[in-house]
Length: 68
Image 1: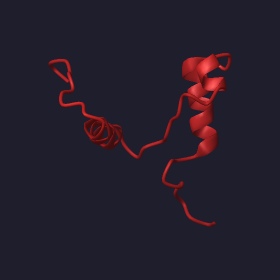
Image 2: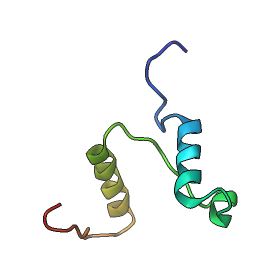
Image 3: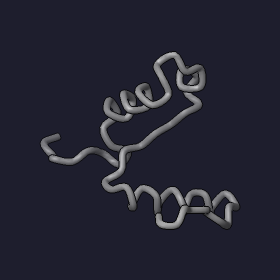
Image 4: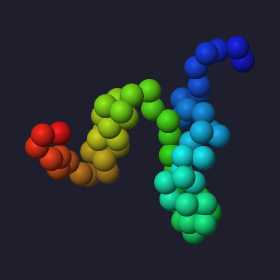
């Protein structure tokens, strides 16, 4: 309870506000609960985890610009 860090998915209020900001609070998919989000410690760490999730669902390639 007195920890200085958030839980595994981050601060739920922050994530909810970020999703509303990005998609708009009137977004039907957001209102239906079809969009999810998590807060990550770092950008590259979050991208690494997302890449692993994509791999589990059969994706074999990720395209990135040059320079990345």
